[in-house]
Length: 456
Ligand SMILES: [Mn+2]
Image 1 (cartoon, rainbow, N blue to C red):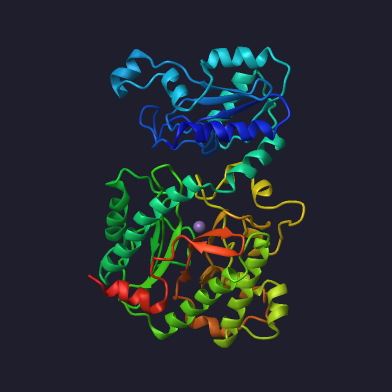
Image 2: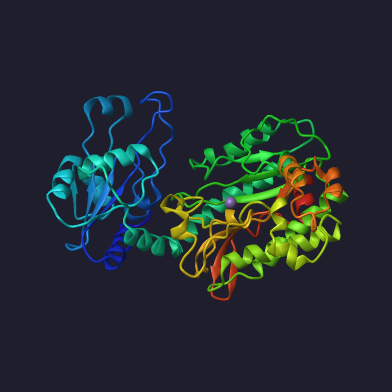
């Protein structure tokens, strides 16, 4: 947890951006995996955590905008809960830690809100248990999230303060060590899970949380692949997309792709270089005020140029770009916001945090998957993660449909069907005149990756 006054000033800023009423932030509770008492690890809601700093379950936060006061909401622990789980700190103690003016039980909260005519601003609920609790608290089954609150929260959370950036840097130290270890430990004949087990240990021993379930696979063309059962072979590439949170939960999200044998083949070099150039083309566009959708398009254009040199793309590059031919190779977005949530604030709705009146989402395959399209602001932290993949089922479908036949050399793709995929992902802080790469120390060039694989 940061200093108490940091949470107080975040709440003060929120109060200043709203006119009247109450704001209610629901904290998360433990959720049973197969029965109630065998719960998934506790992951606090990002907005509750941002404004109140507490990661304990079964809490909520109330802010009265007109009174300019904040309240921590929670019930005292039952004796049986204390017997099984150990003593929990009191709600009063937690409220003081968070700098609240007072604390309330959930029953008192319901009475207070139901006897007041002022608006209760709430965020969209992505957990059914919280949606149900909220209906009970408000005595209302038709709850509409407050757009004014959603926009005010995004406006604050999307720009990172000094202490937030510091937390991400702390997370990045572990993430760097993990990626280096993975490159060193990987060898032909090993199972993916052998390296994943080591990778999980890197942060676990420090009491940290993984920001998301790691992707570690020789099947890099499966974008969110969470299986680790392959035996890795010489000649294959392995894609490692994994990151640890900092001590205060700020996420990191890094991808590196490297050869199982430690040496890239010439074909792997060619594709890897294209992805590196795509990333550089995107980075060249980044600074505050620039539209991130254009960064995606810059990466896509660079990718098409590279693929054309290999004879996989033909025709006019600008036409191929406008018609979305790159989507076959690069079907996901260039990147996303990152912060307390690895896809920061995704629970608030992409059309709020990702797009605005000036930039709307494209419906073209590939570009439509871009989570963040709008203008960048200084101290936003984003991922920049282009990739080139050879996805057999997608290639087969497009080929059968003769889709964009004028640009895609389907015959040439035959020999790439077992290639897999390459993705390179860094975490980037936007500045007024460019960017600052938070993951610059993690090996990325062909020679640095080979050297890291060889170090043992
Ligand atoms: Mn990512």
